[in-house]
Length: 610
Image (cartoon, rainbow, N blue to C red; front, side, top):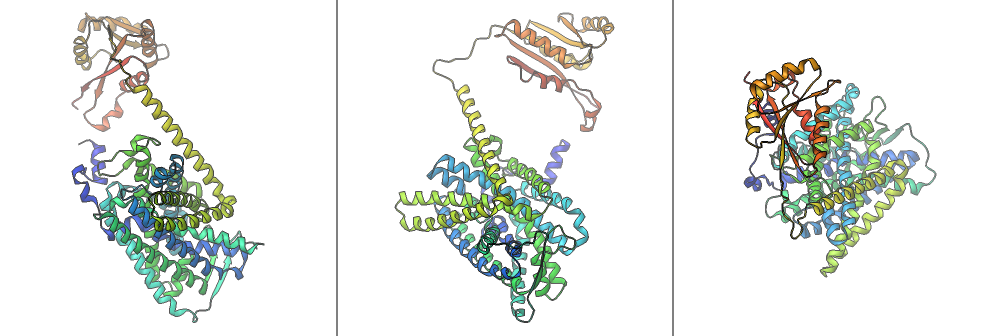
């Protein structure tokens, strides 16, 4: 087994047969952990984002956090109820992209799809960064290694997801439900302390300033807290990962998700506004998240439960990125099948996952983390605009669909969802535009342009490859064979024998850097292949490739309709590490000739034993 294949099998496992695909489906328990970990995890930082924004207006604005949290929970309920209609209408998955494409227009679908792709990449970057910051809060000495931990976490997530859906769900269930249990315990132990612990919020952030307009500040805080809705669409997008009955299990997961997220979000926000906490920036020495400070007070110090919460938070935040790993490759496969992304993204890998999409997501997420320096506050302003773009278009598509079907109750539900998400989209655009949301607008436009360019290419390709009526294969009168031996040795004998079977119009072409070697080369060639003419090209600049390519271009120019078959002998080393010891000219020759018209390249390999 080649070394690359052996490493691949070790990391991601043996291939899974297509016939076994149904065994990769999972139930509600594991499906919730796989698809909803992102939405569950946002409770670790959504309350902090609200407080971080309200702190700009001073201490008297902090109490608004409770009302804002309740407003966001109401929005969560509306959207979950609306997505239940999407699941029933589109059990095959595809979510907002498919709904908008089918019921509004292709442009609307592509816009929703592009917005979701941006959201998923940001999900990985934000979740991993927030998880690493949770570790920094518990162990400040790790702060210099923030970037290292971020990259390592993404690498781990990528490998786990390449192993397949079923294994991913099992792996992520433990940290997800551990975090949920600890959050409920935190709320249960923290609520009785209200009234006993003196509330005090210390604002210690560099960008602290008094906002002149209170309502605008509240809108900004609401927009920041809407990060709590990120990932809420994942179950609707990935319905097909559930066991039969898929729709029923997906709806159950949706209900459990709503209960878990709403309860924890309100509980953490309530405790945070009634406990002594300090609101600070992640870049400051000794940084502690709001959740870690709430846990310290609720559990009575930095004890076992405190560190358990920090570790569980780190785990859920990092593994929450798995929601994006589950849905980003699936969404890119839908878009690729429609011809707006490279078709390789629609290919299933050895483990029945869209591995090209997984790898692409990992690279983009690493770039975003380096771009932001691992600071979630720099990424979150980019976060919610794309999410609510997709939400609004998806719900608008459901309104159109249900109205046409005269399902007026469903249409009313979806209209409420569309109105709510559309309003929030506008609020986020206005309040976060200068904070970085403008970059999402540019990124969205860029991605839509990429979709257009890819589809344009595929349309052009289809026109060029379509066989018109009466069109037949062209008659090729002759072909010329060129044998390109690197030098005269035993390894090229098989290539010579093969070339003799194909055509009588055969010649050998080689290059020499020193003209004095030409005579000796001709003598040796006459000895082994006197029936094949040898053309020796001088290469004063010691290039093997350029003289041969120029010779072939000249040969093609003599007759544009003539086919040219180029035979390239290639040495194959016995061991992978021996390849670096060989100056194998076959590869650069093949690359140089690959774009030449009417040129067929044939490799004849000779294998080395030791």
